[in-house]
Length: 64
Length: 295
Image (cartoon, rainbow over all chains, first blue to last red; front, top):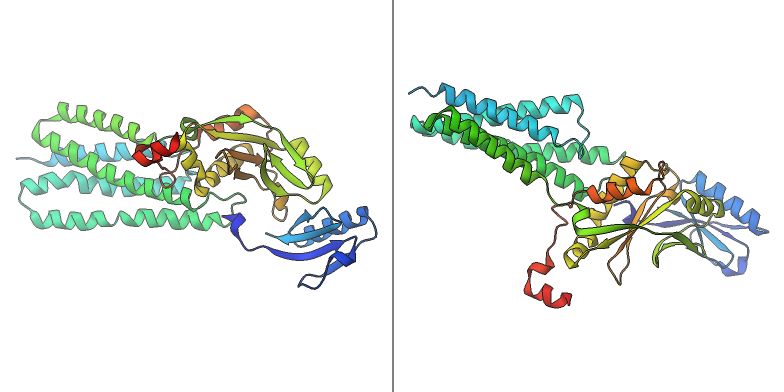
């Protein structure tokens, strides 16, 4: 089934850089919410992946 | 004694039975013209095996009978053939059928060839033994039994389908407390709320709950819904993937789909008419422990 495939965080888009540390995915820092959403959307379409919101100013792009 | 009428009669009966069974397949499987030919050809061979079985026995041609048993083995390959074709096509399905569904279809095809052999065997036997009239009656009887056998249970028998509102709890798409997925991009959320559809599939009893618990069964429901109503899911847009998730407390299934045709009555009918897969079929209520646990 398609859902049980391995999931990978491909990128992190954050308004608060201090919330993100280390890890394997590149981090994009956005100045405001609109920019964050836009960058997240672009990245998700480029990588055929999905935007997830962690609800604390951090968005992650996850490949399903 | 002349066995030719028996053989020819059995052959015709077998091929007819296979054609009738093939017609009943169409909803499970896109019947491409070439596939139809493949199956009728195989049905012809199967009928021939069945039709000569009794005459061979009566002529004491036991070697021939042994060979027929070997030939019948070939029909195992029908299952492999269907499984392989469907599994390969599966890779390019946007909403896959799921292995359970594929396995169910493959098994059905195999079983129908055996039914063809059986029909040809019985009909030819009756022609040899009692003549045409009885054989025709038996043929009709077999067809009725076959039609009854092939109508397995459908989801509508084990569960009830009700419309339910989709909503967002923060970034979480939910339906009646069932978590479906985290959607991060706000315009997608709006699209899902405006164009998406959510239904609850409520099992009627513990048997239904056990069946809907099966992932393959849920995938089959999702596939059928997406195949008949269309889906806005596209390559690279996993947000619009139709999903079926369980409420872990009640066993109800929340189904989300972004259809091309937003029509609840259609969706309800599609879900209700999805077959209950053989591999998903479970009957805890038939056991004593299951009945005690149910109350």
